[in-house]
Amino acid sequence: MGTKWQQRQRAGLFAFIFLTLLPVGAQQKKEQPKPPEGSTDKELKIGLDAAKEIEANYKLINDPPMLQKLNEMARVLGALSERPKINYVVKIIGASHQAKDPRAEEHEVNAFTLPGGFIYVTKGLLNFVQSDHELAAVLAHEIAHNAQAHALRQMAKERKLQWLQIAAIIGLIAGGNQGADIAQYSQLVLVAIMNGFSIDLEQEADKYALSYLHRSPYNPVGLLTFMERLNREEERRPQVPLGIFQTHPTTAERVNAVLFWLRKMNIPINRAEVTRVARATPELLTGTPMPAAQVKMGGLVICKLAGATQQEALQRAQFVSQQLDKLLYGESPTFLLTIRHEGDKRLILSHGQLLMTVTEADAKLNNETVDRLVQQWIANLRQLRWRNILNGSA
Image 1: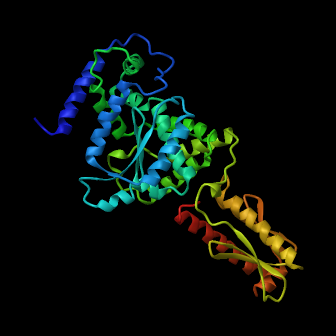
Image 2 (image 1 turned 90 degrees about the vertical axis):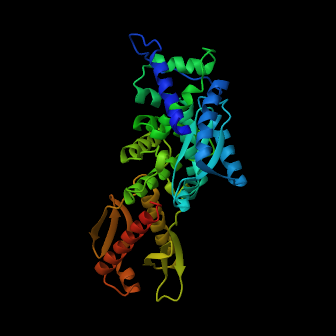
Image 3 (image 1 turned 180 degrees about the horizontal axis):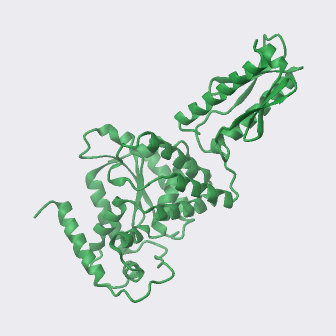
């Protein structure tokens, strides 16, 4: 007796006993076994059985325009993977049927894939991404899990199986051992996915995902910005549970690995291209006692700059805007502000790079001393930095 879930657990235990009886051999294979290019009937059976379990416990969300976008993205990215013949099917899930707070589905950020090409994304994830580039990065990551047979490899880690045993399973999926009951593997695979992939498999999926994205219409930097923002969210809310789909242990180590691969692939890192961020804007000012321009970002005035002519003032504002965009959304979006004295001028630098120059004319325009104006502009820069962090855009 027992619930259907308990019965499946017992079936999983039987499958594990069956697996341990497979011949192990004295040595592990040096190369990992490779699955076939397309989904086989047996692999689809594993995925369908697991999908039935998921869809019996979680609400499916019908959003035709979004589903069309997701499935088209998966088609493009899947064709660039190591298993280009898999027909990926993406679905959106909401809260668990047992969830006490139905609004939880708005905040749970996750995605996962099942054998056979079944990908699920949560409604919370769709709310969380800031561009199609970030959304494509998530799908590319899940496709990489599938293409690299990570569900089976995770099962191997948890059950301490040898690669020859996993090779036997993959051989069965590819069409061998016709007499075996492939449904016995569904529970083991689902439990492995539910428990979450190890950090090395997550990092491997990130690396392959970057390769797919680099050859696609989508910017690979979307994977970096998505993970950075998710990491900040986890740090701010460490006690928020993600349920059984906590499959992405985002860490600083993982973010740093993506940065390393992006640099190695010579991919320019410009976060502003893949996130919803305010850009620095230079504007001419009127009604001032001298030619002047200002730099604004997201409604915040960073500085007001004087010039001998309007063109000079605007050029100064354009330079500051360009430097701010590089600083906030470039490769290392951190502030390390220093001040350098040059005669009656003050130079504000970040990591040794000039951000802005404060002159006597600027002080007169702003009705301040040069030194007090320097501190005001530095305070504005720090306010801008913290606001971007809180908004999840830097």
